[in-house]
Amino acid sequence: MRVLIVGGTGFIGRHVARALDAAGCEVTVLHRGPHDGDLPGSVRHVRDESAAIPVTRFPDAALRPAPDVVVHMVPIGEADARAAVEAFRGVARRLVAVSSGDVYRAYGRLIGKEPSESPEWLSGSPGPFLPEDAPLRTTLYPYGREVEGPWGPLRDYEKILVERAVLGEPGLPGTVLRLPKVYGPGDPRSVFLPYLKRMDDGRPAILLGYRQARWRWTHGYVEDVAAAIALAAMDERAAGRVYNVGELPTPTLAARVLALGRVAGWQGRIVTLPDDRLPAHLRTPYGSEPDLAYDTARIRTELGYRESVSPEEALARTVAWERGNAERRVDPAAFDYAAEDAVLRPGVTAAPGR
Image (tube, rainbow, N blue to C red):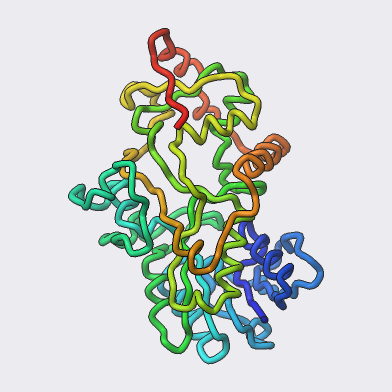
């Protein structure tokens, strides 16, 4: 099977390329060329140094030889998704697009862009998890028409419109994968740095608000997430389907931080207190309800997806990388330990490890 990956040298994409190559696929990676992602020599590179994100044009070298499947790692909005559909309709058999859990109405409600009236599973109660047919946001462009992305400012970012374009063309069957919060070595956002730095600094306690502590957001280790994308690319049963990707189960934030602490060798505790008593630098700009916990049964049942890296090993690899990453940037304002010490006192309860 010939697979073209659009954006296959980044944090997640390089693992997708490796997984497909290891499975025997003929892999071509289309990218801008600053780096090769440390990919196997069998992977073919098509470099377009003049390309920009979003990708709206595809060089002839990316279309020849014709790919069987195109995996688009970086679709931003309607324009570039439609550009991919137009370019590969009649060329490829299928288009696989990476989307996000931010399409769900629950996410819109979390950031204050959707009304609070909702079914029970949107209310922040313990379950059930969000299935693929859960309601989507009714408000487009929740961040505005321009958002800061890993490649700089992005205009018209909207994964709902990406999904509509990819799934709306009968001549090019589409597959959509809604990704969780992805972590692991090479993570440009350093998901766990706020907690790991405190642990490595010997902090006796990590503060969480009551709602923060019990909040759940599905995460996924980068190699496992990439394996799910590769699996969907290779399996024709994925045509026309939407899949949530992520861990099973999804722990609370308090439980996640405790698990990180065990791997990191931290001897401290989690302290919970009313959210409005948190120091200002620890408060989130939005609420902690509802949960963003995804139901991943569909990809597990239909395609047989399973994680290959244990949660403990995934955290251990991530901790090792973070500790060895000398270039990570730390904002001192986010680590105001004096303000945290001011609210630590006897009688404040420890968070349950759930």
